[in-house]
Amino acid sequence: MLDSAATSSTQLPQDRMPVLDILRGLAALAVCLFHFGNDGLWSRVPGGFVFESGYLGVYAFFVISGFVIPHSLVGKEHTVSNYGRFLIRRFLRLQPAYVAALLVVIGLWIGSSMTPGFKGQVPHFAFHYLLTNFTLTCDFTGEPWLLVVAWTLAIEAQYYLLIGLTMPGLHHAKLWVRQATLAAWVLSSALAFTPGMIFAYCPLFVLGLALHAWSQGLVSGKYFGMIVILSVGLYFQFATGSIFAMGQTDAPLVIAVGLTTMCLIWKCRKWQTPYLVWLGMISYSIYLLHVPIGGRVMNLARRYFESDILLLAAVLSALGASILSAWLFYRLIELPAHRWARRIRLVVRPVK
Image (cartoon, rainbow, N blue to C red; front, top):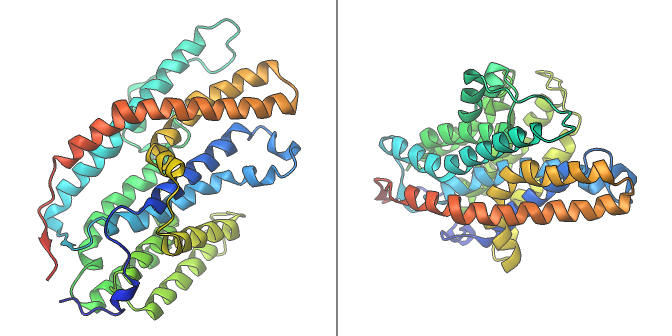
């Protein structure tokens, strides 16, 4: 038996939590709106500062990921021997859609370069350029991203590499091992001096990890609170440049979004809004396609419209085009990929 440090009354349900889909959908919409008006449109619209901050949805994704991966294995004993299968399952769930999105970007870039009056950069596809994009390693090689949001997918991929190794510690039978695992995740942010590495964002993932650990009785409420405070403090220290000079000026906003996301997962776990749940189900495809699809709608609108009213209408059109293409993407690519992933069964044993 686990020497649980909290009572079972705090435990979250082990099945699918609609609030996670809802938060994913809202975060994806926020990022879309940020990109569609980041040419200065939102600064000219009353209340537009809300949409100017839409990029913060990325950090909500990090907190959600921190929670959902260990939560999906509640009641099972994940061991290091499962590591390969775990990574293959994550790869099959996510990589096919990402590769397909890159092919869409490449195809649209080539098509755009053939249109009269094209003023963009001429397409170039050197092998190392394509290789680093398809393997999510551009931040390590200095190559530009084909898909501007892919840097966040690279951070998520590093999270999967680390969580697959540390989950046995998070679910270990001994309390001190579970506590040490969470502490190690927090303190790893000291390695944030390397650009493109996950460590700068570990405190955000830890907010999700700590919530999972506390909600399942793996750590006490006091230890959970200590980890949250330490995570927030270290993120602020690193992000503002007082230690490793990340130079991030919006750290308070990032922290606020991270804590709000964590609280919503906990307090609104029974929240069910069908349309938002549906939006969350296709949020990954929305995230992948909103720049190449919706972004082109906005580029076309900016060529012909000067009125902010018309540009706002174009934002709605871009959003609609992104959601429609994402739904098709989800049906044709994501769902089959999920079926392939489910065929890779993890060798698990119930926790005694």
